Amino acid sequence: MACFLAKLRGLLFTGSSAMTGLGAMTLVCASFIWFFTSTDRNINDFEGGLDANDQALFFFLGALSALVFTLICTSIINRRMNNVDPYTSPGLDTLRTSSYFHSVKGAARYWQHRSRSQIKEYFSG
Amino acid sequence: MATPFALADQRIFLWLNKLSGQSLVFDTTIKLVASDYLVPASLGLCLIALWFVEQDRQRHQVQQLGVIVALTAMSISNLAVMIINAIYVRPRPFVDLDIVPLLYTPTDPSFPANSTAAAFGLSVSIWGVHRKLGAICIGVSIIFGISRICGGVHYPTDVIFGALIGATMSYSAFKLRDLLMPVLTRFLRIARMFCLA
Image (cartoon, chains in turn purple, orange):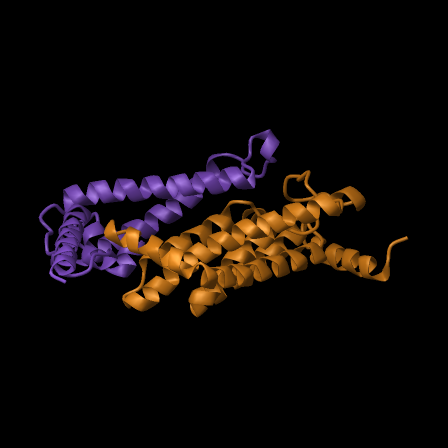
């Protein structure tokens, strides 16, 4: 959903932004519905519920695993998207025109080029 | 002997709480909104959106710093609530009054409302960097707090003080951000190297 709104095409699972947005909205709603209807959530933390710290930890781990899954899968799906300018500072912006894998490669090239120029500048006085 | 203030607090609580048990739809809605999962998870998703969604680079950095501030505010709100709970223990409404709560019966002290403090810590921080989204989150947090009263697990003053604690800790987290700006900027620079910021 965030990638759809931010127009990060390199992180989209489908070629169509609209389909991705719709799919994301469906997944979010479906997961909420599944979570609240699959079992009774109105229980104490010592009767099987989650305490606040566990909840925060699981949310963080869930978000992290979703991010890693998205980065890997979209790097494979969008492997032909490679429009990184090695002289432009890296960041999320590069994901608008390239997959994550190509963006990180481009970032590595950028920093390599920058460190070489800085070393050259340093030694040339 | 209860003070007039405590009596007023109880009266407002009973007035809101008597809305429960009248309608299945209302009760189900309260159980859903007041649960420990819906509002906190939704606010967490708003933080993810704030991290990724913004076209302007400068505003983007401000929003990403706002996410770090929000997480800090939530953590120190929880810490503040823990410290207050160690000093002052107020029983839950269902302990002192003859009511049946809609939610499960928590065993920790009623004052201040921990979940409301965390929700306001997040919401006020979001408002600090994105007015529209922050206003919606604050609105949702207010509804969350009121639903906890209707659910029978907090007094009105627990929720009000929880909200104040969350807002104050959010303000403190913003001040801390200003102090730690060089460290945070470096962290964002490293994240940018991995195309994650």
